[in-house]
Length: 339
Image (cartoon, rainbow, N blue to C red; front, side, top):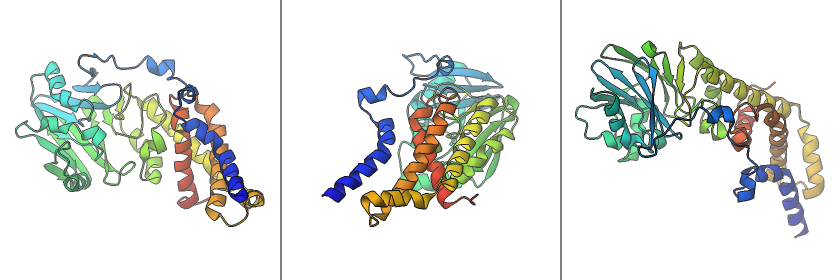
């Protein structure tokens, strides 16, 4: 019993900051920093009766948001192309389009598989002749899921596709920075508009674990790939404002700072000395716990450095910083080339 108590005490002491960060008690929630005023000023002005707002960003492109999710549509001379149909307001997109133009919706493009971004597509099922465009991998996944809320694509491709409609062009390119089945860059050159969901959220730090990426190696590359495009407006699929090149650049800076900080602390730490100190308390037998001691020490030291550097630059830094550090640590520990 004494050994068990010692083990729990060590684990508790090492993890105490993380527990404080993740607590859901009302008093614990007050520890988080409110949304930065500079970000709050750019919220979409959502009509509560409609549940969404529409912003004209030029070149025939309109962004739709409920301040939680984002989609967009392109009005052409021969119909409308919709980019994603989020589960929260997808049902309202046809009426949102009708408020802007009398052109019919002809194409729906899926950015990737996740139901929060395409789970409202069922609202489009009665549109005759609708082309639903997606990557082959996305289509295969959705066939297996057989989800009535996510309509099956009827037009698929492997890696690149160009759509021309009514004098407008949409360029689609596959990447793998977020989901195993593929993620699209959606680019409208005439509008200098770029959409890539779940990598950059204007004004905010990324969502948990760098947008729950399944491939941090590719995530590290995505920012330069985005910046290679000529765009003014960026849509990342989430939250309260449209983005710009500057938003991509600052998210890159944050991501690289997390990665390099974790790598430096991990690679320079005397891990055997850390383990030896823990062995004095819990003994040598619980190797999982001893390994956790090392990982937790890297995590907490990295967070202590990163939080003050970023807490006033991006909204929500403190909400998911631990998960960002842990995602980078998994990559550094098991996948990276080392020092």
